[in-house]
Image 1 (cartoon, rainbow over the protein chains, first blue to last red):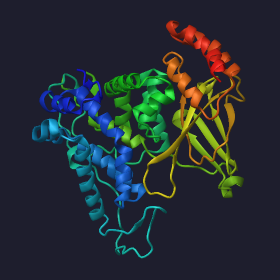
Image 2: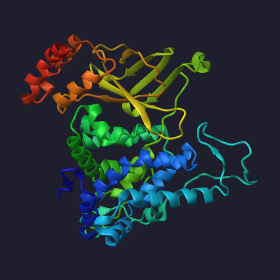
Image 3: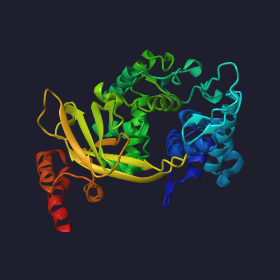
Image 4: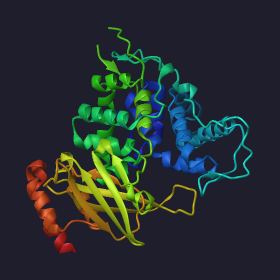
Length: 248
Length: 183
């Protein structure tokens, strides 16, 4: 299904397709769209007093929460063509920032310029933990019964939030390289998912390819990865996901 | 029976891979020298070393394995306003360089001097001849702050000619002359 109009991606068509047809491609496209908003959201979180070192986690939570299909369906059903994804993302971000501050027990005066907590900050006696738990909407991903292939079910024990070691990251990237079998596709994924955090337009420029080509290849690569047995196996081995269910 | 990841799972795995890479002191001797930094990017099989030569001159040294043999590489830096807490990009700088085709103990290395104060590790990408769009390439090449000579570019294109799609080969071969005429 095509979701583009002359002016770019038609967000309302994506939302409608997700809400009414549970369209996978539309869901992936909205995921990409949200990814492109990450730098803006992160800057906003920092402006709202979240330390830069934690802003990424807060934004990751926001994007993960925003991608909840039930929430996306509700957004479409409530607002239809008036749905505004920027407002939607910022509302979720606002609540995540509040939750972050609550978790920090006290709101620490934060020097955003020097990336430090100000010296007279009222730190509580106990340990102030900044660790971010995964959003509840992501802790229980539903099994898509309409799909003929077995999915990994029960994300309750997913541990993707943990820090990956350099060796684990290298193993994953090497596996991605094997699964994709194409240097261009690997580079697209690396540039967009790696710590350079490029959007697809920047990625396309870096590789001297068109934005449309980068977008199509990005979507195809993600599809390929999701169904790559080797990649699933490595993710399982690293305990990033739980074991799959064979329902054949 | 095939196993299959959900969109959400893949999203989370990719997010977990997105962690800022740590900067390491270039050497023990240089550990106290804040003007030298080293980034190891194992997944890219590349090491990037930065040395501040002066207030307006930075040297980057790129070292990679056989994956980088004779690669035409594009790097980009995003420059931020250090006085502001926001992540708004002030300016981007990009360059091209060509890795050598001869190795030294299995490593390919290139030093590039850039007339700019650059303090971060750049985004790095290899141009893939099979898919590169000649028009987009020319535009990027023209606006690059530093780039190889047109003769080096011509040699690279001729060496990799069979890797370009047949319909684009003529266009690629003409690029150095076109760039020379426009400069």
